[in-house]
Length: 332
Image (cartoon, rainbow, N blue to C red; front, side, top):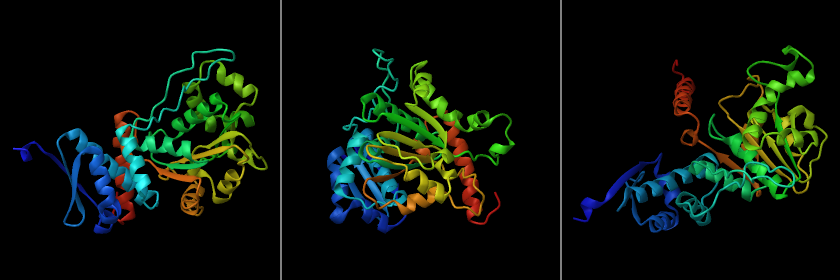
């Protein structure tokens, strides 16, 4: 009778080697996950995990842990440890509070304190945790996964708490085949379209009128990437948005602007590189070059982390299908 009440789900893996990595030495990681959620985890055919438990919720949470561990091991290139497994278990179970703090900046001398921001997916929770634990975070993922929004929210939280004294938001002025010289107006008017998404994020996170006040006093700066050369920023949270459109030299220049007491977050979508084909993306290079350095975290978000209109996820998947066909040599 007990067996009929069991909920069971299978998770197909790429290989037996991946199963060994995820389950850990002598199945230590699998046992840890099983004990955390009260489920039974066994390997079938070498590359299929079967998760069984008394409730759909418990089985679902265990499956989510394995999916996040696959991201860490496969896409982020990190060796799994028992601490990482326990961390992910806590994130999925909700034992770790990943609130960013009040997202709205109070007016000087008072204010409401604003609403709290919370990650809405397991991947976003890993991203927030990485920003809390590391001085440099590189976040790669498709449109709609909250890469920039969460980074700006984290920067506002740091500013409000006094952990940093300044926010610097940066973007490469290269998109969709356009260049500054072709745009009408003076320099400020030329640059504004490239920086508008950062203004939009700030306007959504900070109380009305406060953005202008902090920009006038240069507590918040929004600048093109080229304007960062020669600067050293202490006690600042520095965010590079659309990092996939920075060259390798530009990425090195940006990362070395970091001074004492500063934090850096780089976000980007490797499916939207607007650089000439002969030039390698600085973000792609940095993800590989910096992945083994302590204090630097590489976070990959996926389709399951898209939190915009549900149609966005379907659109992203449709374009990914074409990209995969092109890589295999088939016409889209």
